[in-house]
Length: 188
Image (cartoon, rainbow, N blue to C red; front, side, top):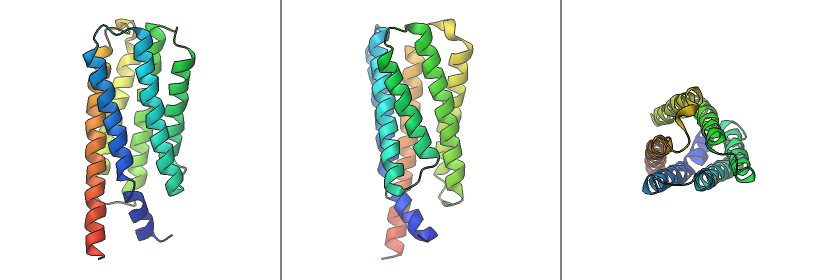
């Protein structure tokens, strides 16, 4: 497939970023709405978010026949979501480490995907993925370095991270859609 066709095909899946972003915002709002949430419920929310985030990334990658960073990041998210469901009794400390590790690794994958896409797209939207990746890495490092802050104390940080991540992913998806529409209009 020529580069222009690959570009158009990739841009057709702008909605995946918007879905990922909406799920992240929903997760963050739910975490803020229930400040006395139990660790088990927080694990379930995180598991659902990670699983659905991974599924949407995998679907996008498979439909585009691109088994690179987006696909690998999706598999990672699904695995972590399943792990959170399988071991719900692992309380605060394990939850903090799981979320920290997930955020750290997912941030690396988002940055890698943005750099991989910059060669295909000179649209400027990839910087939003880089920012969300950097925020993910900073958050993950903070959580891993200070795990004794406790699972309950981190609810606000998790919620803020998820909402910020969600907003940046939605913005990137909408920017990608606008680019797709501009390209379609210029070729019509």
